[in-house]
Amino acid sequence: MKAVVLVGGSGTRLRPLTTPIPKPMLPVVNRPFLEHVIEHLKQYGLDDIVLLVCYRHEVIQEYFGDGRDRGVAITYVVEEKGPLGTAGAVKNAESLLTETFVVCNGDILTDLNLEVMMAFHREKQARATISLAPVDDPTAYGLVQLADGRRVERFVEKPSWDEVTTNLINAGTYILEPGVLRYVPPETRFLFERGLFPMLLQVGNSVYGYPSTAYWLDIGTPDDYLRAHRDILTGQIDVNIPGRREGDVWLGDDVRIDPTARIRGPAVIGNGCVIGPQVRINGPAAIGDGCHLDEGTFIEDAVLWQRVTVARQVVLRHCVIANDCTLGDNVLVTDSSLVGAGCTIGEGNRLERGLQLGPGRTLEPEAIRF
Ligand code: GDD
Ligand code: MG
Image 1 (tube, protein in one colour):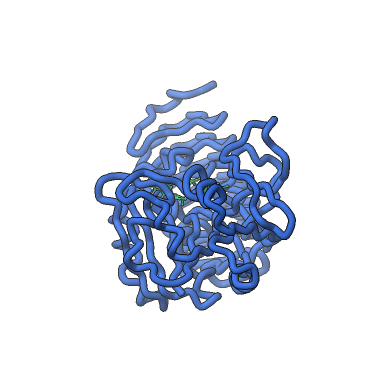
Image 2 (cartoon, rainbow, N blue to C red; image 1 turned 90 degrees about the vertical axis):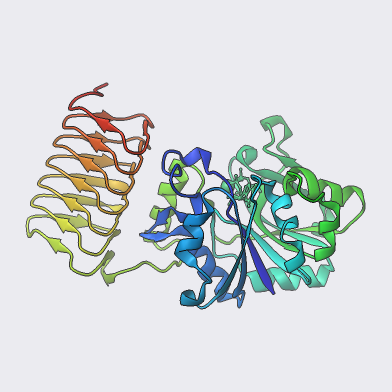
């Protein structure tokens, strides 16, 4: 059976992190997120994978190639003329989809049992089965209202609060019969959520919802991207974390830690990192390969990508710093602030309140002090 993964979106809510790379390539516990998705599919024998790519697709293609290194076979279908939307993108791959197939959004962290979902799909003889997850706030997702026997009665994509009638939302994994794609117009922007699914209900196709209590998170906002790290590192979902485990700290190769530094997990520290004197790391934290942290720096609930150089007495709390950034003495980055790749932040700058610094920016010393 084939698995089709939607990875063509432009990840606007995670800019500037997604300016140079697509959302599924953002590192999560020091590995591109899509690796975790592929490993989850592989666990269920889904090793024939179609990636529906559009935004910055070359980054994905270069990294994963034909998938052989990871024990899967990857085929790419590129939306050359711009994004076709979720269903339009799958329609674009229709010639590859001749039997029942799985579709997943490429930004979902989950341990959903796909085998049990498949058995449900077969038992119901469904044309489409949609995985559902309970959430506290359905307004950011697609609400799915079920009738008896778990038949889908109604979809409301991004409902307002007065439209909320259930806490179950579309969890972004579907099992589909190929025939449903005939309702999707070719080469036209078309969505599952607002287009195909409501249409299938209208024409009387059997669409079922499959609620589950599996771990589920959409990593698509800064807070949820950070939360994915916290949940993985605290063991709420079982995901491969790179490095040698010592208690709740995963250490890469050739890491140098000054004896006066204090690391409290859970944390993952990549290859070749240098942790200077009096540095304090309070997990959850993920520090990518080749980072250098100088004296007295404090890191808590933060994610640093690769080759980030941090000077003295820097505070990084609940924030993300992308590749190749250089931070001067006494810099502070907090409150879901995001620093794009290749930034140079002069000493004494304070980036707070969700500030987003675009890639390649240089901040003179003390340019931002709220
Ligand atoms: N190839 C391709 N082409 N992929 C796309 C396109 C497109 O035009 N548009 C979006 N995608 C991919 C994104 O890269 C992402 O992996 C996935 O489809 C979902 O897109 P998001 O933009 O993250 O959608 P969302 O999170 O607002 O809403 C969707 O997911 C929710 C669950 O997280 C909907 O399916 C909701 O109904 C659902 O509740
Ligand atoms: Mg999403």
